[in-house]
Image 1 (tube, one colour):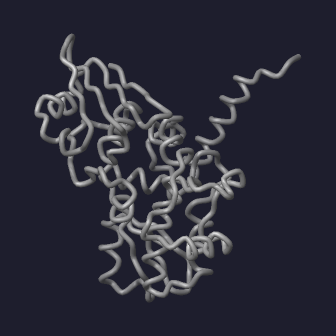
Image 2 (image 1 turned 120 degrees about the vertical axis):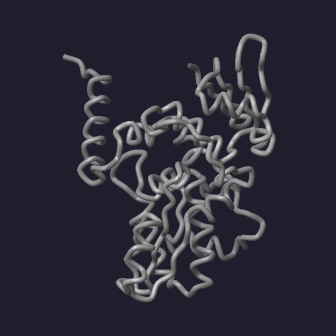
Length: 265
């Protein structure tokens, strides 16, 4: 009897879901599924860029050699070799070194946050998405190690009680913003119950980050609105209303020269 590849794939996905629920039982199942979304994975983990001009290559290469940051084997020697999540982490590493956080502490933090045995999942990826979806997270790194991620509310609850040793904190939103210059992170797009619908989550990712070349909102027959920046989006009342009411025909999203996707009602 031949192997039923589709059945095996579904069983593996079910096991991954269960593993995530066992550790993060408060996650909505739709959010777990969204973390495995092909378009999201392309944007966060497959699309590669070079380092920013303000990040000295000599220092970045030194951290790369020490596993403070990592790249895939096939990307070695390339200019465009860092994905979005690695670049956000790199933004944090530069700031952490200014605070004197040791290299070994950052190496261990990266292993904890960005590596996982579950395909398409890492704790860092989850917390980046939660931050984008108006659940801001803080990265807490004690000098002696054992980095953790807390919600902003949890950190503010425990910090005044003196429960933490000497440490540095990093608001993820600040370092996400550096990676997405066309972002609208502070804007509330008023999408109702976004965590219950993968299409709402996908659109919210693009609206918050501005990670697109352009958007084409097909509001109704013959009414198409072309959006290139977050600023033009926020100034278009009809488009903003269509997002709030979740009332449009479809949205074409040109991510870059390599990939386009669409959201249809």
